[in-house]
Image (cartoon, rainbow, N blue to C red):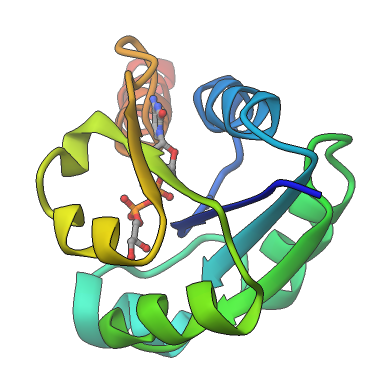
Length: 135
Ligand code: C2G
C-alpha cells in the first residue's frame, strides 16, 4: 500500500484544498492529512481559524480522498510522522516549494501546483467587501 502524507490548516475548506487532496491521493493508495491544531495555527502561523480543529477534522474526514486525519502540533514532527506511518510520498502545495526538500532522505517529496484563484484569505476579504457594500 502506497502511503501519501500532507499537512495544512484547511480552514474554510474550499475547492483548492480538495484539488490538492485529490491529486495527493492519486499518487498513492492511502492519504494521511496532518491537520494544524488551533494552538499551532495561532502560535506558529499567526492564523486564527474560523472553524476549530474538531470541525476542520470532521470536514476533511468527509472527503473521499482522505483516509486519516491526525494533528499537526509542531513544524518538526514530519520526519517522525513519515517514519511512524511508513510514508512513501510527502505532498504539499508549491507555495512551499523547496521548504521540505530535507524530507527526501525519508520519502519522495512532491510540490503540487496550487489552485491560483482561491484562498481562505480571499474568501474572508470577499465577505468583508460584500458586507460593506450591503451597508
Ligand atoms: N492549497 C492549494 N490551493 C489553494 C489553497 C491551498 O493547493 N488555492 C494547498 C496548499 O498549498 C496546502 C494545502 O492546500 O498544500 C493546505 O493549505 P493551507 O491550509 O493554507 O496550509 P498551510 O497553512 O500552507 O499549512 O507544515 C505545513 C503547514 O501545515 C502547511
